[in-house]
Image (cartoon, rainbow, N blue to C red; front, top):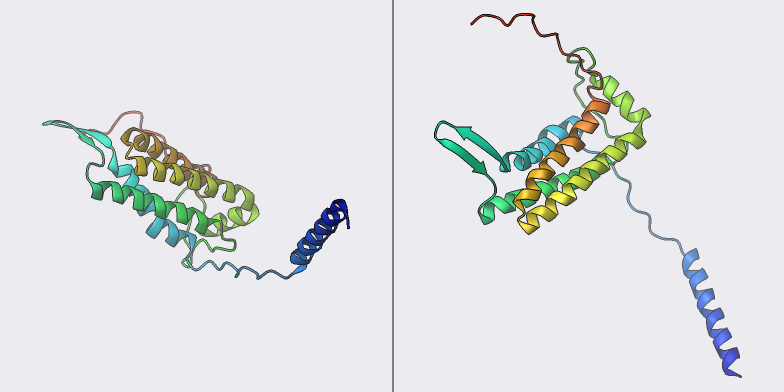
Length: 191
């Protein structure tokens, strides 16, 4: 047998093995099952962790002077990292299909604000948009995690805005897309 014939046979055997492997049944991933409503995820996971990020940095002017807030200790930075990790995983939770908005229906909070039933209809009929907005939350969370790991205060401040835009983008699309505010009085009320 020539070297060329041997190489051809080996190649044919590798192709056959690859085809055989491709034909083998693969274990199916278990189905996702949403266990938590969207409202519970927002109230008990996403919003509290976002608040950790948003409250970690900023400037406050007082009578005594200006106070600069930013993570200073290992514990402060660990809190930022933990919040970013939880937000990152929460973005994956949002991508699980068939998640209910709430177990306890709520009414509209005013003009341009959806009720829970309307929120559910909007998400169900615009799932691709909802998923894209959840991926915006994932992106913001990934960047926040990197900034926390680098202990980068400036990035953490900027990324707080990125997180806010990710949250508001979804809220303005699926919760209060045309919220109307009452007009301001012509004259402010007297004290």
